[in-house]
Image (cartoon, rainbow, N blue to C red; front, side):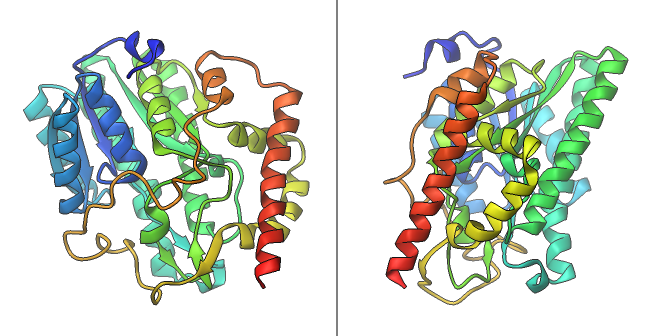
Length: 352
């Protein structure tokens, strides 16, 4: 059931594009838009996941258009945008969400691998935004939502390529936002900074760690991210949204004590991002092609962390309502993050 603030959002029946829509946060966001009666274009590489996502969108009450595209290919992204505009008549909302990543120390990532992560995760947003603006600016309306992360401000170990891309997206979006404001445009761009989310990405990214990749607790369900994305799409004047108390705590703590976080993450960040032994050998994941075959497979929206993932929290409400996050949230949220990390270290030490 939709909450009152979701029902109050303007513009039901909009034409929405979601990139990376075959799984994870993109899949959940596509379904959230569909539940409002929006027409949803789903962009991704894996045909199996796209087909399943399109079926879910239609069953949720939306109209679906599945488009197979590699977001690192600028021409293909432009063609995909035109296909959406031809089918839906316009593009009202464009959600940039597609990414790939590598779990490994920087020195174990090849130049080609680092370039590929950058091309998909950063340039994919640039190409998607350019394609969206080509259709929005002539109408002088529309909203581009950049799905970001706490890692857009705070880099962590073992994800140098992904963190670099998210930092780049942050700078690019700020520059574009200033240009749109200067022109007096009614086209909006906003960014949603997410916490750790229970998605299948931890089983499909390239991983060179001894253990299986995992999100750093606390972990949120993808529907939490989806609600924030839908809200941002209807309220694009806001510069950005912080989702989850851990995101707020991390961003505020990084602003006042980045050196302390450097040392804390150096001590805890390696163990906190992996759990038990592997179930199989390391592979290329979804870096170059969809995971598990040329057409991929349907991974769905959720990862393997349902038992620990939470479905919301007070910061979700605070972000929507412009509540100022004070010292209490900073101390409480940062304490929760550090406590979770220390507890995890303790469990891993006992296992060893």
